[in-house]
Amino acid sequence: MIDSLLVKLALIGVIGIGAQWIAWRTGRPAIALMLVAGILAGPVFQIIVPERDLGHLQEPIIKLAVAVILFEGGLSLNFKDLRHAGWPVLRLVIFGVPIGWALGALAARYGAGLGWEVSLLFGGILVVTGPTVIGPMLRTLRLPPRVSDTLRWEGIVNDPIGALLAVAIFGYITYLGPDTGIGPVAFDIGIATVAAGVIGVALGFAVTWLFPRGYVPEFLKSPVLLITVIAGFVVADIIKHETGLVTVTLMGVVMANRPIHSTHLLRRFKEDLTVLLISGVFVILSASLDWHTLEAFRARFVIFLILLLFVVRPVTVLVSLLGSSMPWRERLFIAWIAPRGIVAVAITGLFAIRLSQYGIPDADALVPLSFGVVIVTILAHGFSAKWVSKRLGIDRGKGEGVLIVGANDWTTALGVYLKDMGYPVTIADTSTYALRRPRRQELAVYRGDILDEVTQDHIDMGQFQQMLAASDNDAYNALVCADLGPEMGFERMIQTAPGEVRRGGVPSRGRVLLESRRSIDDLQRLMSEGWSFGRTRITEKFSFSDYRERLPEGGEPVAVRREDGELEFFSAGQKPFVEEDDQIISFLPPEPEAEKAARNEARASEAKAAKATADARAEQEERDTEQQ
Image (cartoon, rainbow, N blue to C red; front, side, top):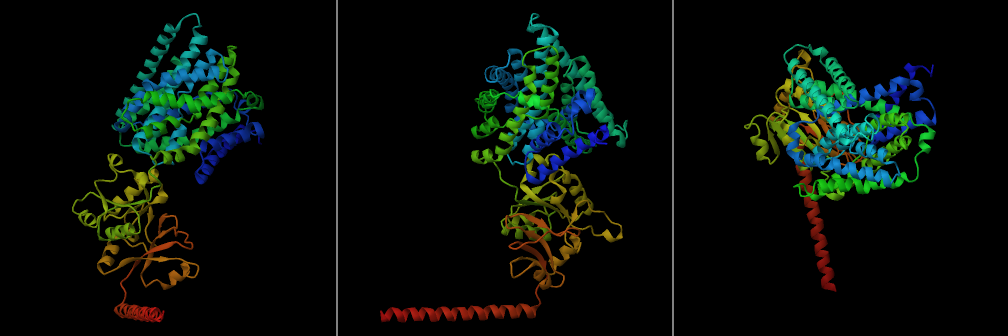
């Protein structure tokens, strides 16, 4: 049974997604764990041997997966982002690509000792900076928009450029021959690239014209789009190998800048599919290594890796951005970050096979060297990025803020209370009138629809650890949670309970605030009756159970503050785990007058006794002084 292809495919999926999950839980780079998992499943235990198990299917599977990955990357390239990173990205493409290619080729030639043909080809591939690695890395960092946008655009734009450089060098070496000259090769590649680009742009415009006009039903949009991406890639690849990467990238860019009604759903589908493809393909590639290939990693390759990390990338970036308006701290960070990922390994593996068939010397060294580059850059950049950003002073720190959607008396009171506890609070609402009271309380406010695309240009959503939708529109609260949940994480979204939930009202799309499921109308009414917020520290002697027992009738916990500052709301279906030294924020009814009077009297008595004790101590000190 273990030799069944069906079982092998299932194992590839389980191993890849399992590595992604472990990476999420531990905060480690996912691609590093997938690499280790693939090596264990492949060369170590021989459970998955792609050449044996997949045969001729291995190459087309990898190529189609890379095509979908690049298309999804193109979908994230909105020209609005170039407002922050336009000139740096342009410089890194115009100047950075030739400089990086030349330096990478020289490092491969004199550092790794490869032949000129293989060095030039590998140098072209190395201009790729791994969007499949940079994306997850950026999600764990809070950097200035200019830095993150520059790294994202560079990674995705340079992917097809690096592939085309490799295609050009491969054509020069094999297809046309070294005696033909570089002119015909450049013309041949240029014509094929233009044709591939036209196909990609045309398909992007076609999809964004057909979908909004109802020519494709909603349930078929994702399948039609996926098949269109694959068909466009294959047609361009038939014209010229690897030019399909240009087609799918440009198709994604066109769709990103011509939004349609289903853009968010289609992008979410592509992101989910990309995670699955990255997991599977990287496990396949790392499992394809064998001991002979690993042994081919020679000691002199270490010199090449050192040159790549500390000479090629820094010089390329610093020279390309020389004289730009980007601060030098941001330039230094970009100069350090250049992880390579699945695209570099996939392209290198494809060309290594073809060069070996042509009998080109040193072709067999490309696969172990490319894996060495991926491993070293992922470990070096993935594990050091946060530290380097902090040292350079561009790290914005962990998001500690709270975003509250809906301005009213209850949310304003909660915002003021959280602010007094040290949390940055922002209240968003479309009404200028409703925001007047939060402004008077010196809370940060945002006037506008939090769901507008323009919002992301004004609000850094990464600064918030929790978002509470508590407007007086239950449907809008549900829509906010449904729309922003995939971006921020549904575990960080919570909404007030719909007012008519028991009578078939608007269903919630996020976790429902409070165990009692009080609606915003109920909370507003209680505020007008004198209810307020309070906090209680849980200690060894005063447990959470004791807190529950002493809660006034009707009062309930709203949120728990951890010792490290993390905030978590109590919800109807999920109760946070409360530990010692945590603080419970409660919504409490006003004290009865009798209890309030008794408590004030007790405090007055304690104050009077304390004053008497202090006076007596002072008199004793005066007598002692006189005696001395």
